Image (cartoon, rainbow, N blue to C red; front, side, top):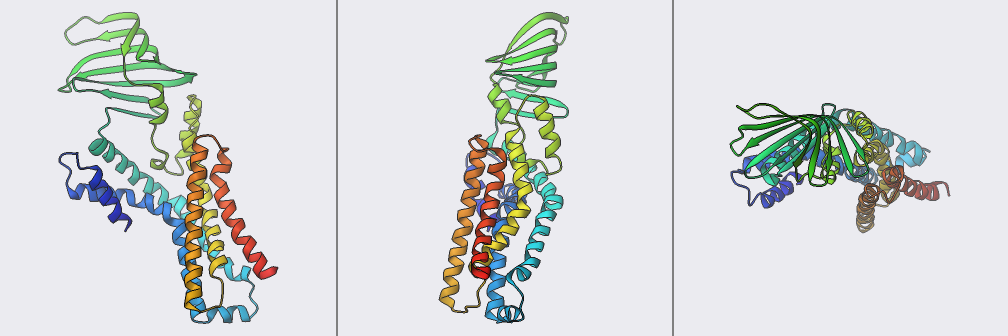
Length: 339
């Protein structure tokens, strides 16, 4: 179903794009699928637990388990451990694959559907910028970047300029530079053009439409980086003067996922741990459980948005939904079983 709806959405967005066949859109939806499945994993665990409890109750196995003296905590320990193991495997194995496929999806989306004029990337190789219009294109590379207030300082800058036919037109090699409003300010610049003598400028101003805001907001999406690669990227970004808040928040949300899966087991048990086999009662409990799951999902997205805007502290935004869901399930079970 996820694949179907993603494909339909891509077809809607690709109406104005030329040369995009159905096979390409289906492949893009497939590349995005593992990432979307990761988002729905807490629901999958909760619904699976609710269905398991329903089957055990319908076959009276739940009654037998409780009658031999097993407490609810002994009964729930195996599914909680299993949920934690699923979360750990997801972090260690599934997430690197899903992030790689999502990165391929984002690159196809940028190139085929969005066709952005300016693309940006920062990594261990430095900062790469590309700016293009109908007549020319510029590729900018800086080995080291540092931000101070509203100015981006660049070290060992190379700028390559091409024409509409992608033929080389000009090259700038500068010892340092700055990205300020509307232009690059380059220092100690060598200006190289084909069939012309190389010129040296102590200072050169090169117009650009790239802004510091674009640089800050157009780094690789955190979803395109695996759980194992995020810490190194965060460290590099902070050393360059950027906060890397989206990446830090996403890394913490990944860390919280195994605990969220355990909390979803407790939430499912709070609604469906009963020996009552009445169909209407089960329908009401199931509907209430699903409603609670969607409520927790909304709360998770809301807290995540507040964390991105720095309204909530990072740790609270990433971990609060897990704590709330876990405390909700524990409170009900303690009240019902030990109260």
